[in-house]
Image (cartoon, rainbow, N blue to C red; front, top):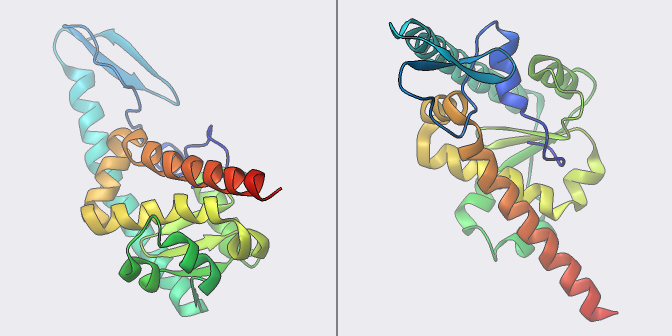
Length: 202
């Protein structure tokens, strides 16, 4: 969802709503439950109370996130969107099927478009947000020229297609890394390919 690795934009939406989501990549020892309030720790929980509360929070957060994604996408479509620029589409055919590339739309955020998303996501460093099949970019230069960023965002479009909006939201709330890691991997792969091609042409 952004160029730099540290951000967790959609997870911030969950935290901003007063809910918590698990981002840990390990399981707590027996008799302990994971408690997340911005970060995750294992605490003694012999009765399993915290674990149940954590799962309840996820069950509330995921539908709220799915609804926000759908409504935000609809607002962007109503405001006006454009197809993926042709030169980028041709280059991205090495990584994505043509039907996905033809279906995706984008919008360059104007004032409140991206600012509202950034405020909602509690992350002012967001340079692009994928709303199902609409990518909202903070600036036009990224939308027209940043092939690696497009590759990242298109991975999310592909994930929405595979999981559905509800499934994507559930997975993001449960462990955003399972969605973000593949997106960053393809972004890095495309970036390396571009640098390698540029180095060979010098």
